[in-house]
Image 1: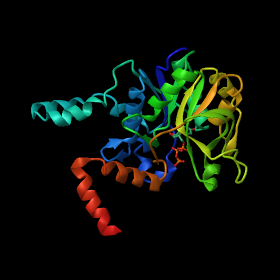
Image 2: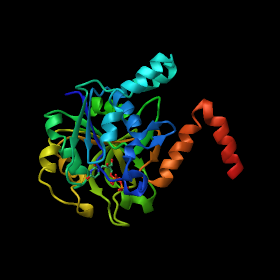
Image 3: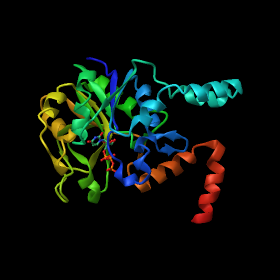
Image 4: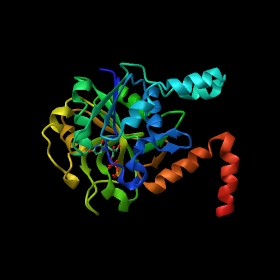
Amino acid sequence: MKPVRKAIFPVAGFGTRFLPATKAVPKEMLPVVDRPLIQYAVDEARAAGIEQMIFVTGRNKYAIEDYFDSAYEIESDLAAKNKTSVLDKLESTRLSPGKAAFVRQQQMLGLGHAVACARDLVGDEPFAVLLPDELLWNPAAPCLKQMADTYARKGGNVVAVLEVAEDQTHKYGIVDPGATEGAVTEVRKMVEKPAAGTAPSRLAIVGRYILQPEIFALLEKGERGAGGEIQLTDAMAKLVGTQPFHALTFDGERHDCGDNAGFIQANIALALERPEIADSVKAFIRTLV
Ligand code: UTP
């Protein structure tokens, strides 16, 4: 079984739910406490053993590329002032040359299309996809690491799922579950944004995927699905039955940071885990409720 060494981060979306902020700042650069969303996703990938990060970006997203570069002026100034603890914080933001690649999605044709833009950089090997606006939080066992462990046992394709409320299924790719073994469920079918009352289950795919390269040929057919977009879920649905396909119920907290309320909730939840600010944030929340 080939190891998963590469990860795709599709970050070309317009982030319209965060306008006007996203007019000039990519959604993925919005901070949860003090780290931008993209940093959480890259840290999660690293923890799962990913060696190469591939960012599918678009116009106005160059802040992401700058973020993962070294920042000579800041670093030399901090070094001169001996501010080593601040310098240490910058350590994980630098991706070595050759370990990060950037490709532009020139037309916003959907998540499936964004993933296909990285085809030549991935080549003929399994890869991960992480949507950075989904903050999947379990510092002890990050989501992609949980999935990599499942992949090591089952091979094939693995998606992360969580149970959502019945009236929310129309917002997600939903899995039709087969045999279940602990947190791992065989996938029989999947459907993108099923119409109300038609979802095969409440198991929603939440922005983490380990996929086999055969998906690229399916994506390149360019078939349009829900919303007129090239949907990753539709291409995955075609792989089901031809390759092992499993859903792993993620053990941890999920914050949908593509949504205004989810983003604020993520900030509160993670702030309460920071000893240096937890007490003051808690005291402030008490004054409100
Ligand atoms: P979303 O639709 O949730 O993100 O896509 P968005 O378009 O940035 O936000 P809104 O809905 O306008 O507020 C999920 C993920 O897929 C990427 C997005 O960047 C996001 O990470 N994506 C989506 C692409 O990279 N390209 C696309 O064509 C579509």
